[in-house]
Length: 125
Image (cartoon, rainbow, N blue to C red; front, side, top):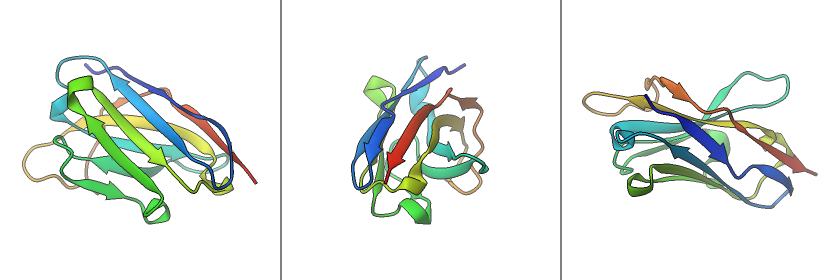
């Protein structure tokens, strides 16, 4: 079992930055791929970024490439999402999620078993 708690959301003006954190419980954090997802008002949940167990491989959705950066610190059981150049359309509830995988990591087929409650990000124009 992994318990995930996000933090770092808030209200920011367009062009600003936020850093989201996700703290995980348990001693198996380093065995999980981690992902960040978001769900905006009236929209479906979408993948934002993901990172492999070691942190060596990363995936980004096209709409955040060059603006967001995912990282993890396995010693601290944490994953982060640095968000720069924020836009009003980035407004959403942001979730972190964890899932195990076997063999080569494929972020496009990765399934996530554990989810946090989310942290709200609001970008004003």
